[in-house]
Image 1 (cartoon, rainbow, N blue to C red):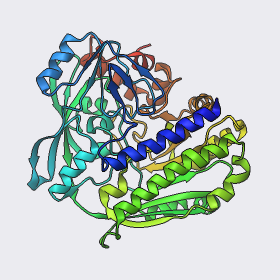
Image 2: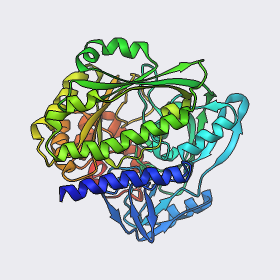
Image 3: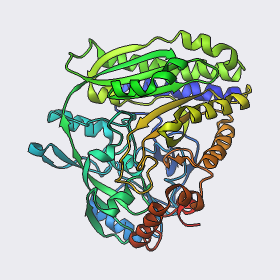
Image 4: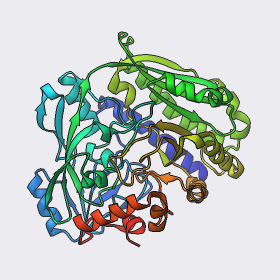
Amino acid sequence: MKWLSYLSCGFSTTFNIIVNALTFGRVLWLEGRVTAGHFRNWARNFRYSPVSFECPTTEQEIIDLVRSSTAIRFFGSGHSFNAGVVSDHTLVSLDKYCGVVWKDLPNKQVCFRGGTRVRDVVKTLLFDGFAFQAMPSHDAQSIAGILSTDVHGTGRDWGWVSEMVVGIKIIDGLGQVHQVGPSDDLFKAAIGGIGAVGIITEVIVQAVPRFNVEQKFELKDVSYVKANLDQMLQDNDHLSLYLFPFADKCQVSTWNRTTAPQSTFASLREWIAISFDALTSAWFGGFMAYAGLLDTWSNWAYGLKRGTDLVMESNEAFNRSIYHLHQELEFTVPYTDTWTECERFLKLFETMYTSDLPYTLLEVRFTPENHNITLIGAGRDRRSCWIDLICNDSRAFDVYYAAAEAEIKNIGARPHLGKFCEMLTKADMHNIHGPHFDRFLQLMAQYDPQDKFANGFTRRMFRT
């Protein structure tokens, strides 16, 4: 059975790359979608058939759907690792509610409809000579979706897409429309609030002039990175790590603004590198894991990995298509606890490892303090280390995740609500966020008094 799972992961990843290449980057086979009345999420770990499925094209249609539905949930790309998009009745895709509402070019502001995918937001900004200051790592997500989960980047001074937003429009559970900005409590409840207070239908982006970025991936000794992490973060605009079980090497990824010209064939070289990493993880990493070879082959295998150094347009450096079929469980801890907690979850995997656990790595990112435009976002009000447990989507990943979630609760870490999240309860949320969570619940009761946006996932964390 495990080898069937291995083949499924490998062939799905390969097919995803082929489809994306043949459509010149316009289609990802693994995006979440409704087909013939059946919804499946990006990670393909659950499917269901909504009672009603709608694709509105106007704001009034969205208002009418909210007012007439007994229960309603919205989704963009379905790049979700939990049941947050499952609806008790009406499921709504905003794919047809997309595009530009207006532009204010002198002030570098553009208003987008909520269903606009990040890849299309980028194209619009580039056409006018603009860019995001920094971006999420997956270009298929919708602009409303990345705000609803408070998607983050990584770096010394910059952390969240929401910090580049000067206003949003929200339709609440009564079908009422609200225009709010970062100083408003409703804005703070919507950012990271996974749609519990309303649906984000418009987003005003504050852009910056377009720029180039030098993206560098290098393999370094873990001991060196551990001793020099503070200085490395200070020396680079953006930095993240990949840590591997049973290995004393890690990948250091850096992104820095530059005036240097773009590298020759940068886009093609980046696509080849991304595709190679995805295929290697799915096929070779999966084989090592299921053959019981991770503990003996890891150092040798990662020693073969070669780095890259490319200068690209900022969006191509920050943001990419994700091809690899995988699962994610992500959470934050205080920055000062970075190595204690990274080593905890590496050790957990190594202790549990048998030939039944899938290929796994830890992506580690960093965000600065003073993020105060969210109430329940995982990076709120403290300098944070984000630890993302990434497993091949194959047999037994949930065994490791169950043990990891127990540890997360024990140490009081803050889970990312867009990722795998099966054990979190309302009591846990209150312990994590305290009075900010109480305020979130007050706003949820005010703007969704009939619980229209609730489903099993949100009830577990917000209502029971």
